Each structure stands twice: as structure tokens, then as C-alpha cells.
Image (cartoon, rainbow, N blue to C red; front, side):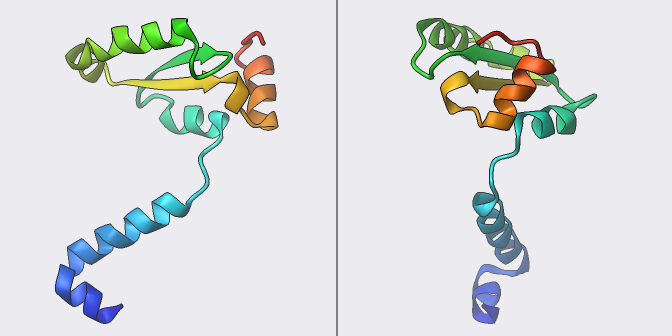
Length: 101
């Protein structure tokens, strides 16, 4: 490990270590993600039953066509895909966000 840090340089080694640690971390829950971005980003939730939903794809395309506007507004776009939600996230979406099935 020490030789890796020497070859990459201290900052490069730390960046590599952070990348490995972050990629090994489980994905944050929907509630944790929203809480972490509160007062920092404008969050837009795209809710769909499946990832291949036509309306979801159309919304993504419309947003992708406006990268400067999204960046200027500090937007964070989150896909809330019903078929991919954990049980806890599904319950949070129904109770707290009032999303329908």
C-alpha cells in the first residue's frame, strides 16, 4: 500500500482510496438523500413504475437538453423507480412524499 501511495503521489492515493470506499458503500436511502440535500439543492423527483417507462424517458430527455439551466438552478434530479425501491423507500415515498403506486 505504501508503494502505491508513493507512485501515485499522496493526493492521488487518497483519491483512489476514496473512490474505492465510496463505490463499496451501499446506496443511500431516498429519505437520507433528500435530507442530505435539503437547503443545498433543488430536488426534482422523477417518479415512474419502471425504468423503461416512456414518460420517464421523455422527462429525462427534456431535462438533459437544458444542462446550463439545471446547473444554474443547482438541480438534483432523482429517479424514483417503483420497481427498484426498497421496502423502506417505498413506505417513505407513500407516507412522506405522498407518491401513488
